[in-house]
Image 1 (spheres, helix red, strand yellow):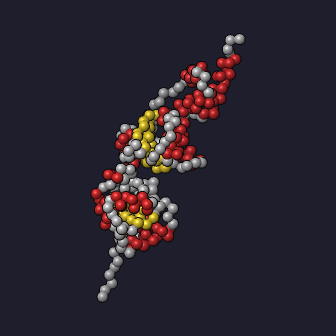
Image 2: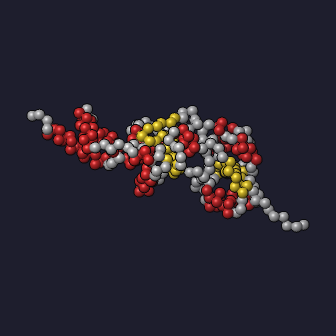
Image 3: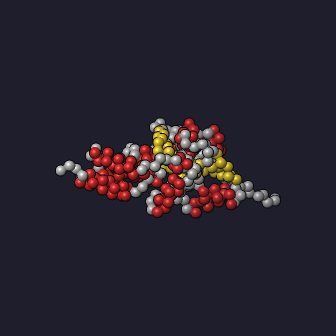
Length: 291
């Protein structure tokens, strides 16, 4: 009997709904039914999706962002052995700011066929609904959480001329909007949250306006910045107008800190510098008051 070469399996990169389960594609359902095994970011969420689709008894293994090289190698070995695997994440498309890159790379290096099964995308949904993107755009995923790299990322995002799309957690959305507004307060933007879900909401305005919204951000958040060219045409506020706004705030008995924070967002400068100026104006007005 002659030697029979083993035919490697296939890795399917399957997009799943980002919220509304009705967005699953027919091709994705058929793929999930046909494969030998599913690799999931969260096995509980994927088992719930499979149950909703009427797919029972399918082996589901965990492969998340913390998967060790050994876990990746085990899945690659299954592909070498001829198994067909479906890679999914909790929502949306794997590898796009989600786990899976290491396995896709390992499969490609082994000559395993990698088949994308496209579907719902928070990036494209936000771009389409924002009304801010008419040409090229840059997708940056999640920004660094803290430190100098975060500040550098904020500056990169706000200075790029193309439209920009980024993801953010609800806990850091307010902080990110403030950071972006400090650099480019007049740049147009949109915040899309809970896309395709019951409480879907899209807010539009300048970064300064969005940053001033003191709401508690909930759900999955995607931020879209319009083209940077709009920022270059923003009107400049001269010293006389700055002083007028400060005096107006002081006349309304507003706190110096609140006046400074609002003006810093509009001017795109340090709040500390503006606060010092507000205090000087307040002291000057007190000294000039009638005796």
